[in-house]
Length: 181
Image 1: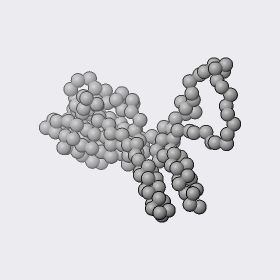
Image 2 (image 1 turned 135 degrees about the vertical axis):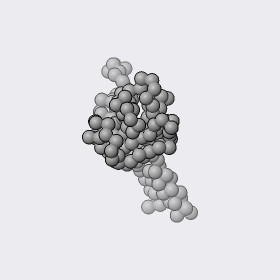
Image 3 (image 1 turned 180 degrees about the horizontal axis):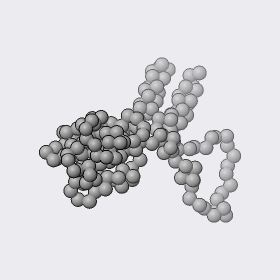
Image 4 (image 1 turned 60 degrees about the vertical axis):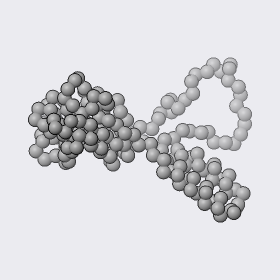
């Protein structure tokens, strides 16, 4: 019986650790990947917090557009001569696997120059961690705050990703295995 319980606990912990916080971003949101309208892809990208594991989706009419992944120099000059990759399906999903800048534009003549280009900047994981002030509770007058009760528990600090989930899983593991050890 003890072995079965340990197996279930181990399975639960493994499932918790595998939880992913990857996001899926449709480039341009409802406007998609186009030269029509007034979409500013630079502003669009600036409002996102891209991370490793995220997926970027380019939706467009494949008759009139494509997506080229290029170097920074090519991006700046809209040079289509030797892209890193070219996508032409009209519904291209690109998984982000490394940090740094990822440069894309439409390779149809004139489209990049018209603004159909985007710089996806993937930050280092620690650079996007919440600051201590972001974790602070709302300000409450001291007269309304009860005195803390003494205990030996460590404070809970919310963490994102697998390590945060491990912080939640460790007490469960401790309880599960304490009766068997």
